[in-house]
Every structure is written in C-alpha cells, then in structure tokens.
Image (cartoon, rainbow, N blue to C red; front, top):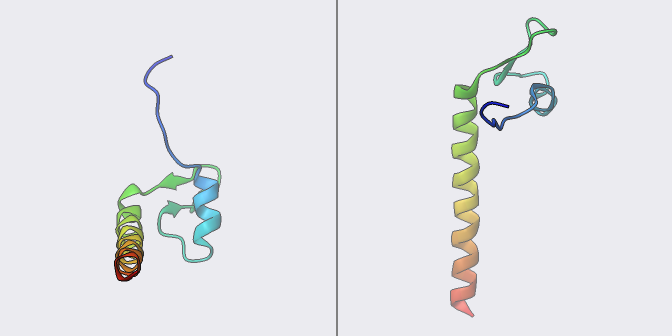
Length: 64
C-alpha cells in the first residue's frame, strides 16, 4: 500500500546516542523527531574509518 520506505527506529538511535543525543530530538518522548542532517557527519566518519582499514589491509596484502 503506497511507497515502500526504509528507515531507522528512533528508539534504537536514541539508545545508541546515550545522553548526548543529536540525531533524535526527544523533547517530547511521545513524538520523537529524527534529524537526518545530523546523521550525515556520523556516516562520513564511518566511511573514512572503513576506508583507512581497507587501505591498511590492501597494504598488508600487497606486502605479502
């Protein structure tokens, strides 16, 4: 029925954020609000970290 959507459960993100929540606005706990813009820097950092690991693994494989 309608368009299929994918997303995150606000409660799960809030649990991951802990006390310093930025991605989920929990001012009104009955109506949690998702701030997708705040997730972009987190995702970029994760990609950078994974890229560094891939580069290191490629260097190790190339040295063998």
